[in-house]
Image 1 (cartoon, rainbow, N blue to C red):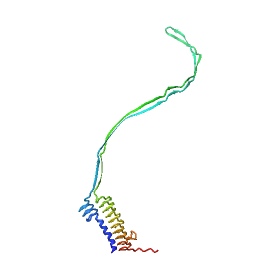
Image 2: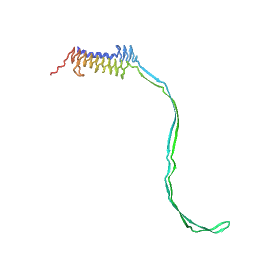
Image 3: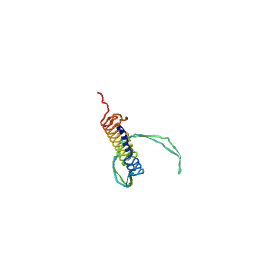
Image 4: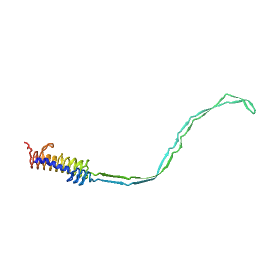
Length: 290
C-alpha cells in the first residue's frame, strides 16, 4: 500500500499544480485568479479568454531645445623676420686689345651743286694697337640686411542658432496572463521565467510547472529539482512527492534511494534508505564485509 502511495502521491499533487494555474477553481489554462473558465486571464469569474490582462506603458517627450552661439574675436598675429644682405663678390674683367687702322676715300670727279659723282677708296693700312688692361671689381654690399616687422590682423564674427527635438521615448508592455512574468511564452502566477507554461511563483522552466521556485518541467510544490513528475517540498529526482526525498519514484519524508535516477525505488514513509521500503527508518542496503 505504501508503494502505491509513492506512485499516486506524486501524480495527484502534480495534477493539481498543473491545472490550477494559481487559482483554486476553474477549467481554463494559464489563468491567475479564481473561478475562471476561460484561458490566459487574470482575476475571477471570467468565462472568456485573455480577460483582465493588465498592461502598462510609459511615454515621455523632451520639448524642443533651442540653441545659439556667437563667436567674436580679433586675431592679431605678430610677424617678424629679416631679409639677408645682398652682396657682390670680387670679380675681374679680362683685358683686351683694340687695333687701329686707317682707310682713305678720294673724290675723283666733283660737280658743283651735285656732289661727288666718282670716288675711290685706298686700301686700309694699320696705324697702331691699343691694349686695354684687365679690370678688377672689389666686393661690395648691394643691399644691406632688411628687418621685417608687421602684424597679421583678422576679425572673426560667426553667429548661429537653431533647434533640436522634440524627442519622444517610452516603452509598452502588453497585457499578459499573470504578473511580472518574464517567460518567453505565456505563464500565469508571479515572477516566473524560462520558456513559459508555468504557474505559481519564481519557477524557471518550460511547460507544466506550478508552485514556488521549481527548476524542472512537470513539477509542482516548492523548491523541487531534478526531473519530471515531482511535487512537495525540496525533493530531488523524478516521480516524487513529500519532503526532501532523493531518487526515483518516492513519497514521504527524507527517503533516499540507493538506485540511480533511471530506476524506480518504490519507497514511502520516513527516513528510509534503499529500495522497495515503507515505514520509518528502514534500510535494506547490505553492510560491506570487512
